[in-house]
Structure formats: structure tokens, C-alpha cells
Length: 156
Image 1 (cartoon, rainbow, N blue to C red):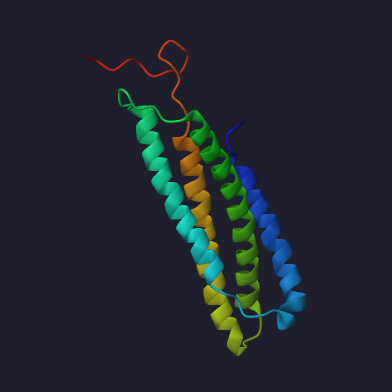
Image 2: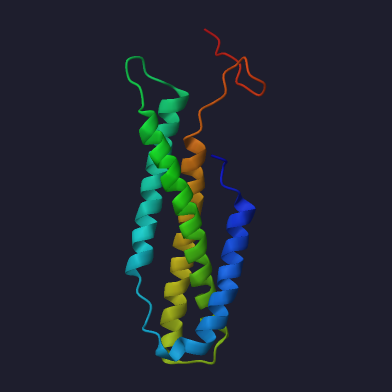
């Protein structure tokens, strides 16, 4: 599996933001007020991914004798990281497009609340993408010292 490429995530978020901005401009009056519960849940997921990344990275880089991290668990974390990166990029684009519309639309009472919610949600989804990339990077096994680009052995 290849590492997630950041330019693809950025491009995906930009395309989705543009499409959302165009769509929301046509149907904004029929949409309900944005809820902050779903983005907060994704923010909690981002914190969990950072915690997993720190733990797994430490266990891979500095193994404890007699304790081995399960490779299947690490591969599941990589899949979670990849899925979270793409989901976060798409949702960040959706909320950024919504934010773009609410900031440029003529003033209405609900617009300021939706702009605030969509700004928070876009930020939390961007944090999810960063956390997912950090988790994916933390799950990489370093190359052995005898391979090109490998780490030199630690001095005794």
C-alpha cells in the first residue's frame, strides 16, 4: 500500500468545496441549520488517532523485549488512517464550500451561525486529515540498517 499523497487530498478538498459552494447557493433556503455534533465526533476521532500514532510509533521505533505489537493491529490502523484522511478531506471541502457560501451570501440571521459552525467543522476535519497522516506515518516500520536509506545501528 502506498502512502497517502497530500496533493491528492488538497485537490479533492478544493473540488468538493467548489461543488458544495455551487450547490448550497441553489438550495440553502431548504437546508436545516448545521449541527456541530458530527464535526465534534470527528475531532474526537482525530485526538484518538494522534494518541494511537504516538503509541504505535514509540512501540515500533523502540521495541520492548518480550512485548511485540500485533502487525494486524498496525495494518488496521493504517486502513483507518487512509480512510480518515480521505473522509476528512471530503468533509473539509464540504464545510469549506458551505463556509464560502455563508460568508459571501447576503446577510440573513441564520448565516452567521452556519458560518461559525462550518468554520469550526472545516477546521476539525482538517485536523482529522493531519492526524490521519500522522497515524499513517507512525505505522511505518523503519528500514533495516543494511538497506539503502536505512537507519544506522544505535551505538551500544
